[in-house]
View 1: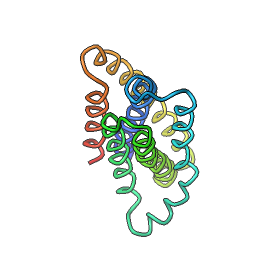
View 2: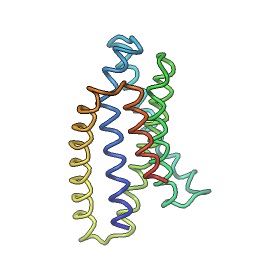
View 3: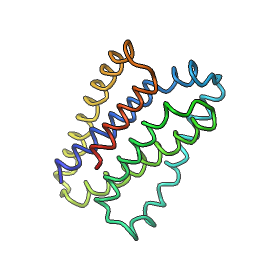
Length: 169
């Protein structure tokens, strides 16, 4: 279970960090939004976080392990699609998709960790997963920075989304 969660945490962390690294410049330069619209998009990104109680209903039809992996797939789909939607409504739509995947994963990640590790192990597992997630953030930020000299936004989003979704599969 530790390895399973580790792989998914690295992907979810890298996906969110990569999306954040690309999003603001993409929104400003390609979509042409202003500061208020970027704020709206960031606010919309948090709506799925408020609705994570709906995970309970999804778990009635799907096992938690599968939901965790599928959430990472949805995160990757949202990230990969972002570069192809160059309008403000399209940006909001892909933001919601990406955010649903991320927030559902975070919910199931915490739940699975508490279920599979005892009271002494769980804090250590949480800390290690957080540390590897931070390392993934630094790594993906560096990679995106390097790729941004050669590739367009939509290709960067697509590569990141494919990597995240493929790992979720």
